[in-house]
Length: 357
Ligand SMILES: Nc1ncnc2c1ncn2[C@@H]1O[C@H](COP(=O)(O)OP(=O)(O)OP(=O)(O)O)[C@@H](O)[C@H]1O
Image 1 (cartoon, rainbow, N blue to C red):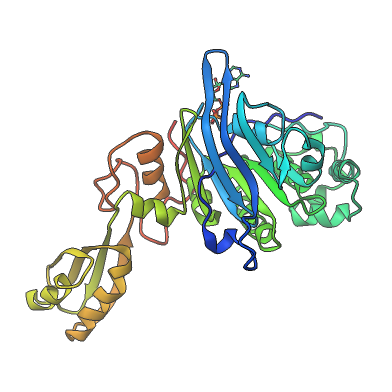
Image 2: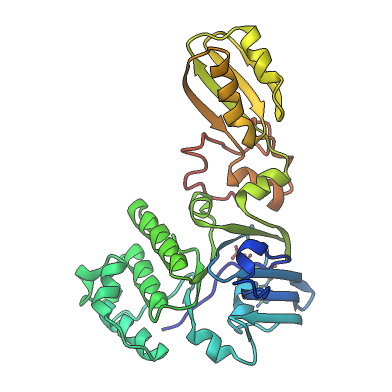
């Protein structure tokens, strides 16, 4: 059995104090800390002066186009690759000097993991338990990842998605403090992708840190607390998705369906702070505004006696943001004039959109 760590990783600068400080102690609790990390392969600088901190209990999405340095970063976390300069700490330990201890507390789902063709799923989980020196219920783990029915079949006969589920089960063995998932949705059907999201959230809820790379931005958007975007070896963005939206100055477009609205009604909306424009055709009111002004817009219309039947919003999707940061495309405006990428309303934005390569 061997693993190849294909993708992902990022580094931090400043931790949000709300989650990073614990119990008034003032101590930052970082599960991953990269400080001034550079990795060169001959003339190629795969990672350049990377500073990144991922908090304990955080779900962090590590994004970037091909060749951005994600895999190299992940490999440095696991001491499969050593930095040319800088320091890497994982679970408060030195990633190089204490790599065995780090790996014991870390569950890894590598990209392109090869299963033992002749061993059953159950044997794989039992193998992971022995490696981690933990006891556990292999059957229950297979149940959790949705392949209990195939527990005693040879993994060589598993489909791609079943193999992915199996390797996820192996990563979850021993309730690791840190989960590193490289393209975890790869090969999964929509139900499997949903289950994966639920597992990621439940792992975070029990206190684990989840660091995962993905090109499926809908998945990232729905599960990550923060994301980091790598470009040409450098971390070009690190924030919550909402924070990235604000950083690129994106406004939202609010389309309100009403019984009837007059120019006078719309004037009240235009007067609100955070509203840059508003117009009506009588049956709908279209407003460009800052995200937190939406409630006031609806309120102002209702105060003016207008009956609001429905409304939709359009905002920059993670795909828009990704293209802005990773590809250096034009600014995201949230009104359809941004990076040329798709957008949707709040309920459908960026669902399972693959990053263009
Ligand atoms: N062992 C190596 N020898 C030489 N160059 C390498 C090696 N590993 C990575 N590189 C180079 O470092 C850069 C970053 O590669 P890396 O695999 O970290 O990118 P990535 O973001 O994971 O890409 P992808 O999304 O395609 O997996 C690339 O230019 C790559 O060619």
